[in-house]
Image (cartoon, rainbow, N blue to C red; front, side, top):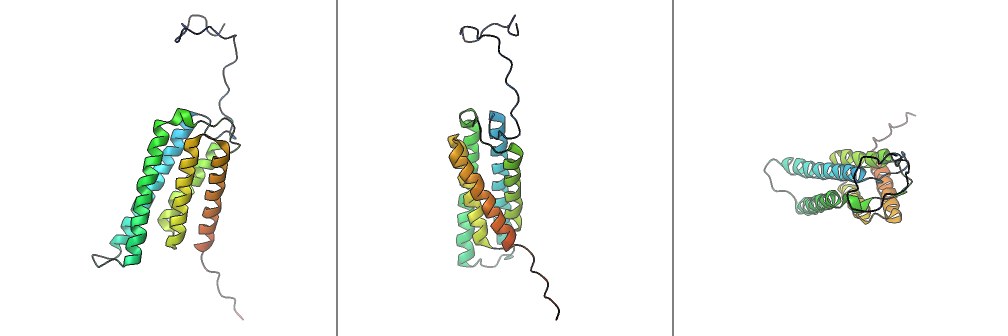
Length: 179
């Protein structure tokens, strides 16, 4: 048997010989603690992008006064950065409790969304889009910490939609048609 020679750790009776669990399929995002930790890593990278973006915008004023609306937006983004870091840290601490058995999304897709978000935060031109994008990341972090499929899928869809909006808003203008 596969368990011959291995002592029971918790004194429980040995279960009938069962094949080892197969590794998660590509359609099972967040199905292991390691995958939850990977999401936490990417959310932390998004928080880094938020911080870099805010600091770049502040430095752009070269020591001059930053207009009040920009200060308000910067404060909101820095508060969101801090909250995103806290939620990512909570995912690290509670990774085992956040495992989802059948999300129906690939881990690669989920991680790519967060990578795209971090990139767009650095290059975004409309601050409102950036704030909404950060809110979607916070929603994903909160949903992931529940370990429940429905809130996670809703958060993933919301993030994807916002990434599409940002892509459209930041697309280069079409060249003027010549007459």
